[in-house]
Length: 343
Picture 1 (cartoon, rainbow, N blue to C red):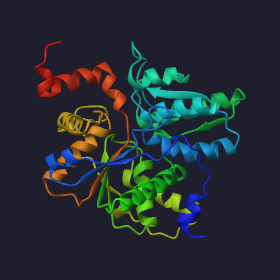
Picture 2: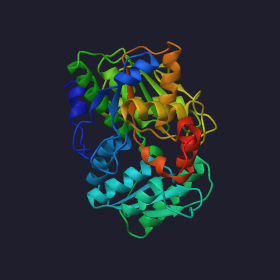
Picture 3: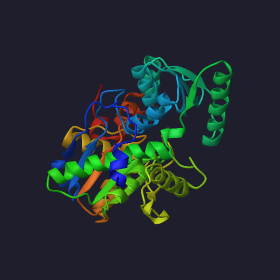
């Protein structure tokens, strides 16, 4: 059995219901000067979808097989990962506790509203660093275990060696879809923070013997002490889980933090143009926390002739952040044609 056959046999839940479509962005492509397609992982059947669902399909199959009944996940109140965990827990009949940095806000909006609707228990731990948040989550998981709960703790962003296999399979899905259209994958551009998406796509690229470039646009700094090293460990660890004899080196982890701006959930150059351009040319929404930073990078790199086409923007979801007043006000005032309107 070869590595791709072994990958296809790993235990996996179906939380999405269908293959997400790949869409040619004809008008957007004309504006930016390179052929661009969009892998629509913002579309799905559970929890307003997003890239985290692919990771959870593999991770939660393993968790349930090992008797887990209570999920613990960590992130910010903006987190797409924790929202996806809460939705998946509801769909699977599991209990869920989310450990969230920052103090409890005055109103529940965006992903936080959804977390509550899905029935998650929300634990706010104040303004802490990512490593401190992990410590808080571990302590809460231990408390639950001592109370008799069968706990499965998910790491930041649901990123792990096992969950990277979800995106190794996703690469194969995209590879087949593009081949059906007579196109090859030149470059994949996506928003990246915890590394499960990037490491999985890099692994999938290697398993298919492809020459595509996977470019991760960093949207959250200092998640790990050695970001490239951790991403590499996820990719190599995923390969080991399926017995794949593929070589993945540090130079295959293609990341840039040039489009991070002021930091996680904070302004960055080009974000408002990215939101406006994709919405007005294709009717597709991206948000200022995650996906718009990747689109801003794509636009800038395309204008610099620094992307090998065809380019695939992997839409990782998260557009619901647009409905958080903090961001909706910023978008409204930051896009010139909107700022001139009177409400």
